[in-house]
Length: 572
Image 1 (tube, rainbow, N blue to C red):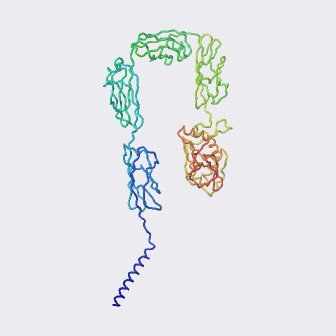
Image 2 (tube, one colour; image 1 turned 60 degrees about the vertical axis):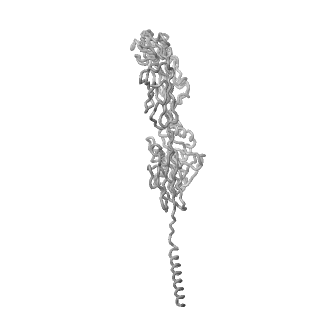
Image 3 (cartoon, rainbow, N blue to C red; image 1 turned 180 degrees about the vertical axis):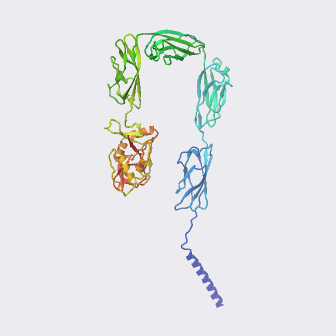
């Protein structure tokens, strides 16, 4: 019995020792933490924006996670934040219900037991609008005559259809283009149906459109030929005569042809003929002028014959003159040249811009009357019609004044926006800045290394940039980005000096306006974190930058990149 009891105790002790031994062996082994990842299903409208948040893939784990997209359909649609699992739109063009109503992706995360499936269901949006159409046409058109075309907005449209029309059968519509044509011309009768209507629908449009066709009653009109004799060399706008009609009320006189071209104008309501170009009324070159006149509802056309009478000549030359913008009042532009046997008198009968020019009545000398109108950006060319009179008759000449552009702050020229003009250069040289930033989150580079030779002054930015690039070979730094930029055909861009950057800030509003008007972007100045690098070094660890939110300068670490922008400039 004692032997048995002793054996049992020994066996129990052996088991206990074995248990403690195994426990001690495993104390240092790494423990794998298994993470569960959950599927994500969302529904959003089609046509989102790039970067729009779709949702976040959920896990039950903790610590550092690494999310990734292992596959997606269609490719490139989604992006994922590797740390948080937040899904965003990568390519908004793919989110088109008509092409991809469902977008899917497979997501993994480190130590996850399984992958997660993301399903993005797109809502179809009505993307088409159709506009009502109201037109007026004459009664009695021809079959197939075009009445008008329905205009749509939004996405591409197709499948136009007429759902109702009064009277029935009057109209046809092109299913692809929305062009309305006459289907039955006998129904277009003013006396029985002065107004025709139709209801039009198109695929994807929320509402139908209404077509309203107002018919004009047609009257019979006869138009008469017209012959007249006048002196050569008339004046602009001189009345030649009036084309006469009989029958109904005439509407819309027009010149369908004339020889020489451009000699005459006609009043569309009254039929009054006037001189359009006096220089063409020259007996020696064109003793007879002719024109063909039509009027709505007339069965025939009329012929106009103008016989010129030879008179003593005034010889006058058209003038083409040049002047810089922003002249002074009274500045001489040039002189109109004319000769005659008598004493000549010069008068401006028309000018554009009105009030810009003055002329000496005795000499024909043209001068600046209103200098504020001589602005290249608004009026690059001015015109004037000048009457030259010798006491017997008069002729007209044309003066063209070309306004020469000079460099002004705010002009879009030389590859960018002019923000500084050298006051000693007679507007011939200065600085322009690019209309967009060339770099975001960019460092100045080479922190801890002193780049000798940079300066603060205006005009030193190009030298500063060359010195930085030579002394700091790190690629992708601010000076490297600026010096390697090619914009609008120019490749001599550089990082502005501290004073040049200050000048850019002082002209910020003008630069922003011109940049946006020409497809660029404004400076980032909506927060106090964003700043722009200059090419001026402060010391071996810092360089000067400027906050465009308030204009403050700061010498900050050259190795810092967050919130640092690059806007390159060049000299002209």
